[in-house]
Image 1 (cartoon, helix red, strand yellow):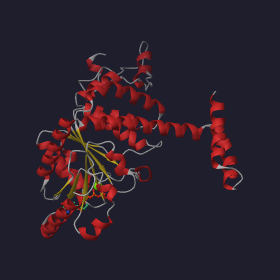
Image 2 (cartoon, protein in one colour):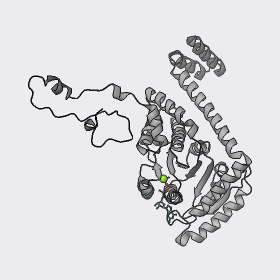
Image 3 (cartoon, protein in one colour):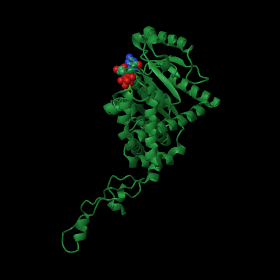
Image 4 (cartoon, helix red, strand yellow):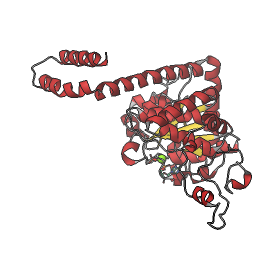
Amino acid sequence: MKDEKKPEWYDPGKADSFSSTVKPGVSGNGPGNEHTAKAGRFVKKTAARKIDLDALAAEIRGGNRTALAKGITMIESNADHDFQHGQALLQLLLSESGNSIRIGITGVPGAGKSTFIESFGSYLCELGHKVAVLAVDPTSSLTGGSILGDKTRMEKLARNPRAFIRPSPSGGKLGGVHRKTRETMLVCEAAGFDVILVETVGVGQSEVIVRDMVDFFMLLVLTGAGDELQGMKKGIMELADSVIVNKADGANEQAAKKTKEEYNRILHFLQPATSGWQTTALTSSALHDKGISEIWEMISNFSSLTKESGIFEERRRVQTKEWLNDLIIDQLQINFFHHPAIKSLLPKIENEVISGNRPVASGVDELFKAFFEAKK
Ligand SMILES: Nc1nc2c(ncn2[C@@H]2O[C@H](COP(=O)(O)OP(=O)(O)OP(=O)(O)O)[C@@H](O)[C@H]2O)c(=O)[nH]1
Ligand SMILES: [Mg+2]
């Protein structure tokens, strides 16, 4: 393509493929100009729709944010052809992924997770890190992604060129959010982000999902321990590598320190989330950037300790294996329940089982026989 035909705003690093081009003006409509006049109209270019995945992968490796966003959109799409492209893109980037510390952050609504990420993320950018912020919001399929919908709490970070913020994807298929967030994490790593922060709201199963995709998991809590501490599910505390008592500022500072000590006492008796690491409580004021450097120091210690012992790599291997397992189960469910043979047979079996005329296991047996028979 000749240079003068390129649009003014083209990306110089990009190949010569544009969905629109600048056409030279047509002078008159006389004889000899018919073709030019015709070509000037909008013509849908089929070739432009072909995605050059190698070029996209190269741009992502080079840290191009537009390319990164494009790759993630592909991964997040629920359309089948995007799924295929997304997987091919991941294949190209896989060897460059993994070089990061993945940190999960959970806590009840209002604990200060987003404010903490704003403060912590900005601090890490100042240290020279590149920070990607992702979210797992179990309600995003219903609400269209609320958790990071308000970037207002992360205004400073959102403007930082070393940071990248991506709201929670919506589900689509079963296990969709889980898969998409993990894959997004890999693409961000390939783009050079060396700290990945995953925010999740402390309700339902999302803590377990995020625990399974990160290296370090922290629980943000507030003061007013006593009863709250008693009521808190032991299970969640046992997922955490650290408990952070946030809002340790102003009149609340002393109370927060006391709460921290109470947590440390209790944590001592609990099963640690990571073997060889004692889960510890610290305080922070996300609003006033206090306690932030201590938290990073703790995570750095965690990282070197677990890398030395091999626990870090081992956890990642186990996580990937479990991820594979989860996806197989998702696929099996989708295939089974969406199969026409099952769709037509299931209501009859349900009726028989519910009315007490048939043992449940025998109903399942018939369904699977019908499923495998239809698959032959
Ligand atoms: N005083 C004080 N207020 C804080 C601190 N951190 C957060 N807040 C305030 O607490 C409120 C909730 O903070 P968010 O960061 O939105 O909390 P969140 O945990 O992300 O909440 P959800 O996203 O709704 O789950 C906001 O009004 C913050 O300004 C802190 O360290 N000190
Ligand atoms: Mg939030």
